[in-house]
Amino acid sequence: MLLSQEQKDLSLAFLFTVLVFLVPWVELRGAGLADLANYIYRFNELKVYGSEFINPDNSLIGYFTSEAAWAYLLLLLSKTGIEAKTAMFAISFFCFLCISSFVFVRVNKLYAALLLVNPLLIDLVMAQQRSALALSLFLLAIPRANQHLKAMLFVMGVFTHAVFLFMSALYYLSKLLSQREREESSNQFYTLAVIVVVAAVFIFGKDVLLALLGDRRAGVSGKSVSFLYAAFWIVALFYVAAFHKEVPYYHTYMCLFFLTLFLFATLSGQYSSRYIALGYPFFIVTMGSFERNKSLVLFLGLLMYQYLQWIYWWGFLN
Image (tube, rainbow, N blue to C red; front, side):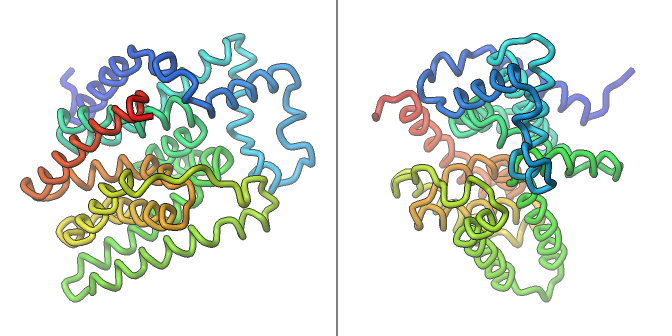
């Protein structure tokens, strides 16, 4: 039986994921993967104490703020008898497979392979599995025609990480902007203004919302990046903004949203690299959607920047 093009693309994505995971990223990075240690501790805690540590007050908000779906996944995996590191590896593999499949189906395969082996993405799937899983569930839900399956993925995503709910809102807003931009009379400055306002409200208002929900993450932020690190992404933001009307698809506006979030988070001294990591699949797809010469400019720029990222990631500049 002949495979369809999508089946071939997904098969290549699987083989690519296997090759990427033959590299011992955790061992090579070592102490740099601090979040992984937290997840391993959580896994072992649930293995010993069970579900009583997931949502002690048994409230709906408690299920949301305690990331119940994530906790129950860890609990379920702990019941299989596998070790915490093996469970985290399996989750990482699944996440990278989902992300690479999303990209492989939509852009040139060589182009995708070169850009997916990026320190930001490796760090996301190998050390920030909960965020990576939320992103993966989101990417799985987007193309689903079956509404029941989409609803199930939505519920799983929302109770895995709060960012899933935000990405869903951005997705539907991006769809609306995409439809509007396809109209000849549409004003592209209005579209960009909407993106700027939404990003600004989120960056400067998210802690207020989390505090109202009683979420422990309110007011918590990691280390921001330097201006030198941010320079490429800021240039990329203005580049995509300048030509976005040529590729008026939802992934273009998702890309612009995440790049703008990164800009505001960097300027305000917040942990900003997470927005690039979460928006990276949309950035690659948007880049691949541009006319060849415009795409090549971004592609070559990102390859050179990625080389510097690897130097920093391995600690040569620390």
